[in-house]
Image (cartoon, rainbow, N blue to C red; front, side):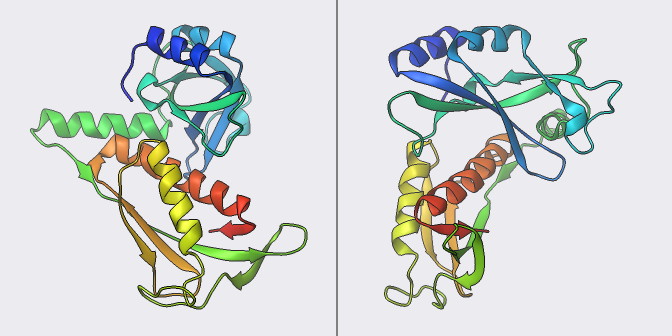
Length: 228
């Protein structure tokens, strides 16, 4: 989605958005986020939202712990698995230091610099991620077990493939969030699944991969499963 800040603020008002997640990625590829209320979003675009980076492994020392999250307007997405009344939206963020300079350990910022260097040499980078995951059953407390959802094989169908309905729900949810799904199928291993989405430039593909991981885990949990 490409929109101006004013258009986004209007979207927030018209669509009953009550919570806004400002998401970023740590050095190990794990998504983190902080939630703000709608009245704080305009300030977030202009000034950023501070957080204690010393609690994020590899980010900063306790002495220089404050960093700021600046939401990227182009990454707005409604989270379909959250309530439709009092909706929740998500932005991916860039990380800056209090003096306004880019935080050198921001994975998104590092990727942006790499793309820029490629551009100065006349290259562009397109990435097509091939995303696979395993579905495991959970116990009576909702904790993951080591028991796979099924024992189907490559391209199998129901009843050997017991994950087809979950994959379908994941695909439709990803489409609602702006990803263009190309194909999905059961992979070779027990409980192993694959969903492929359309290639894009490196930054968009990286954002899409984080969206994919979050969506797969959320939809699987709603179906009583654990996705890895």
